[in-house]
Length: 385
Figure: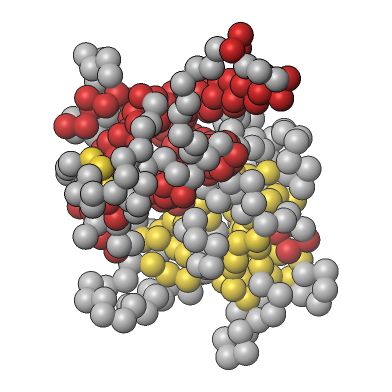
């Protein structure tokens, strides 16, 4: 899946446009359609917590992009339009399962990588003989799916029953499952809530940073593993053409490696300033003790930026960028930086390389300090011992 992609369109006076980022709200159950970045989990209806506009309901897990079958085209969404609904965070498409449940005869909703016929839906009005125009303010519609394999016509359906609690879970679950049903019910109409620009901008920043780290960042580091620094050679002192070739190749390698870490440092520093904006602090490393913006911390968890930052430290270690030759990932402590207690052979890192390691740890701290949900997320994944 593509994951992050920029979204610049919104609603107009004529109605909602394609490529608009929305929340799919179900008034009957007061819930939003949401999905995890975990590809194995089924999309679900997340119960609203208080007012629809409360910050607790502005989770990026509930951000969806309404597209045409040809996603490069825009235009106004009308009743009767074929729409594809793409999850903002994962970049995967909402789709209808191939087969119904043998007991309930309901079709599960799922996420898939491709926008094929199982991800094509028709926006249907709740009123008979209605015009094709969709109201510009919080329009309601039914989602219809016409199965080309079986010939059945199905509609998006929320039974309204909460999911069963997980094993060991005490608190009641606040999520409901969603399906497609052969019954057309007006109570299953969903409402399109356009995500406000300021909320979408923050989500785009987090998603783009995660995407950069997990693609370009990882790729660059794997291509430039650690090598011991060498003293600059005197080209005039080399005794053969082969020696001169090796000197030139070493110089070119060191220059490229410096550019890799300069680019990585730029992204990590900008991410730290995004999580904890403080114009009075010039050095991103000094943001370590600052309080991060809670909403941005939540976005970092929901859009898996935290996972990317933890994985980045592992990629650095695997590429050999450790202070000690025999150091492991477990030797990093959030309060003390890199442990040197093992007595292994010390490694000489360039200042820029060491700074990137420190920035990674700083970003961990900014991600979960003073945020109980993120603290629990770190502990659940075994990142805090």
